[in-house]
Image (cartoon, rainbow, N blue to C red; front, side):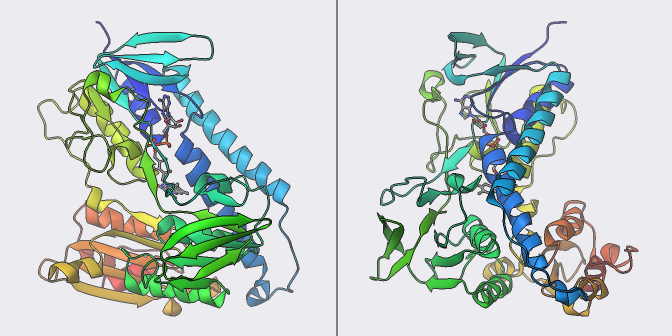
Length: 455
Ligand SMILES: Cc1cc2nc3c(=O)[nH]c(=O)nc-3n(C[C@H](O)[C@H](O)[C@H](O)COP(=O)(O)OP(=O)(O)OC[C@H]3O[C@@H](n4cnc5c(N)ncnc54)[C@H](O)[C@@H]3O)c2cc1C
């Protein structure tokens, strides 16, 4: 039997999962990557940011050992060791993805690919340029930091999010522009690593799209740690003056620090992809137009990950890659295809406290006038949270008042990113609050708060 030939462009979570699944299902697969197998945004943004946050978390824990009944000891950051740690995590993850692809006989080509027609790509490698034909092409080229025209990144003191790791130094005073998920994670990361931090918040609240109670708790924590919040301030310029930077706001305010970091989102890598050569259409946001199967306007070309403009998360990119492979290989023929439910994707913000949510959140329900039942339990009454000396935060479950079905939830507090999985499963599997409440969780555990909130 002749195998279907699939060419995947981009080796991030979207691309390598599409490649691995398609190979598992019997396709002949070629994966083209110009930089790092595992993904540039994934291995050079997502993973190092979480690694640095973990180091910052260890440091802040060390600063409050007395709360655990231990003598307080002093410790400090070793930037060289921190760099090595990030590099070794990246190497290990890149190694394990490469090994998996090789074990599935995926052919990996190092080079930059562009479409030359709906069924072929040309790849520029170090040595020469080659043309590869395919039955199906999966584009998964990801995204890069969005830089406003008023900012000139010098990667020394005026930084994009990708310049922050591995860190060359810990900034003395960092000004973060952007108070969305990425911005607040950087504030948390560097303030816990000892930097003074100023956050430029364009509105009156950080995390404008999140639970206001969660956002308020995070703001309070930032302020307790000495972070300066410039609210209602729209940045319009940034300038380096010797060892200082100044960020200018539209209302005349000026923030001065040693470094500035621009964290205002990302933009898809669509340029130089040869989209015109295959008549692949973009949508009004500049992402590739896709249908619910992630197929582009050209039937032989699929799109996964950040390039698709759905939810810019590694978890979503990976699942999109797998779903595309299922679709390409006809695994749904004769039975209903389960499309990805983006509104049921769990997401987390790795600050201290962590903030995680899934499904319908309270503020959203109120905005649409939908009747809901909201139950909330604070961690201050949870035994494990007290044992951990970390009783900050709460669990909120949103359910349907008539049927009891769990519609969503928010969790703020230590390990929120792990705990939200229970609510995510309940939302995805259409479970009721009774199902969650009657689950026999471990005692003592933070999960018990979920059972209580579901009562
Ligand atoms: C600071 C930061 C923190 C984040 N934290 C999280 C988090 O905690 N959790 C989470 O779920 N998500 C997080 N994300 C988002 C996550 O990193 C992305 O959503 C995810 O990496 C997207 O995967 P992808 O495969 O689409 O793109 P990438 O991971 O960027 O992979 C795309 C690959 O395509 C390659 N490529 C591009 N063009 C070509 C070409 N022409 N030829 C060959 N190869 C090409 C690139 O080199 C790259 O390796 C974070 C993002 C940022 C910026």
